Length: 198
Image 1 (cartoon, rainbow, N blue to C red):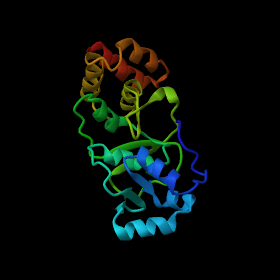
Image 2 (image 1 turned 45 degrees about the horizontal axis):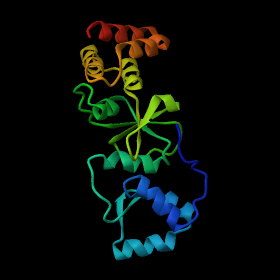
Image 3 (image 1 turned 90 degrees about the vertical axis):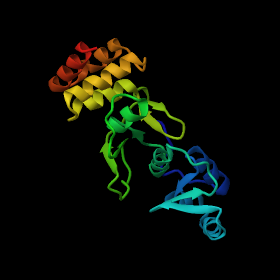
């Protein structure tokens, strides 16, 4: 996954502000420390120009509020080394009707947040497996289908995800078939059944 090196030292308020702008105004207490902006952020908390968003998370006050803010916040938490994946990615792509109760994130490393809402899956993804969704990354429709085939969603739900992906042109059946070649036998069979139903 492309992203910032978490060990890189930020150089002041301007860079911290730029980082926050990439994530819908969100930034972390760790990033404040790396930027050396503790005093400025404390002052911002006092004057209302910065708000607390969650444990260890801050936000530039007045940042436009949007429906994908939660995803942007976790992208900031993991220093861009994260992608929305699995059921959450399917939901973002408009594939199926999974209505996930949790936010599924794939990350190669990093301290997971303390919240029951987020499911962190430890894995590294290549650049070809993710795409930009503005302030965060999401697995591609093909990678999302493969992830769901490897998981435990019902076959009928996987069939619907695959049918939607092909019907709305998010990917072609041949792309899914080719990508599924390297899957374990059970997942490959699930993909084959889903494609047969298209």
